[in-house]
Image 1 (cartoon, rainbow, N blue to C red):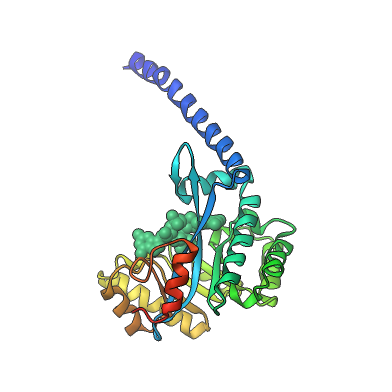
Image 2 (cartoon, rainbow, N blue to C red):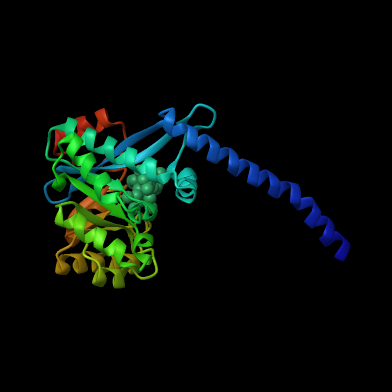
Length: 274
Ligand code: C2E
Ligand code: CA
Ligand code: CA
Ligand code: CA
């Protein structure tokens, strides 16, 4: 058994090597992707449940690699974060999203995902303000989505940055709410304007316990004066439940899939869709 174990170990080594080489190649391709303009932003509409109106859109990055095809964020954002490439990529996203928001000429706001790595950058605020200034989009049409990894860093730097952003009129949304370790304690410490209930809850809403959790989060948001958005709404049944419970906003395939800026623009113009 011992010998077999050693052989198995030796057998594994080249495999590990391949993993490292694959990873290096991904890093190299990612670096080049920015200068080659292989990134694109898609936009997913966000609806006010009570009025049925599209009130906002979330920018979601896509990587069209000539060699890899379409690469989804889950497969490259972590690498971009580890290599620091998320800084220029995040700046590009902000500038691009604001430019698109300016072209829409409606009050629809734009939501941009911000990584913890970006938030810790010294000049993050000036990156945001210059994206707004160059596009002419007012601060109240920009929402920044953060996850609790941003807040795990206890340093005052992040808290100060969040406060300054809010003072400028930019809204802060807490993304993937409910799946982290201490979402509730963060609500006590940091001022947020919105919580986005993670889509894992919405997809499981037929379960009695999950439904109870979702309606409790909605009531919690209402009492704290925080807008609650449900993510990943795919069925009318889910939307009806959320409407009954008084959830303010919904986002998901039922309302609209992430699409190119021009396509979302048409949805926005139609206004009442559900
Ligand atoms: P997220 O912020 O939670 O974004 C929502 C994800 O759920 C998106 O996946 C979206 O396509 C998907 N989604 C929306 N509605 C539905 C639905 O009804 N059903 C299902 N099954 N899925 C739905 P996507 O675009 O692949 O993005 C994945 C994650 O990548 C995002 O999660 C976000 O954390 C990150 N991400 C995307 N774009 C950026 C970016 O520009 N910067 C940073 N830092 N992160 C980004
Ligand atoms: Ca998000
Ligand atoms: Ca989310
Ligand atoms: Ca997510």
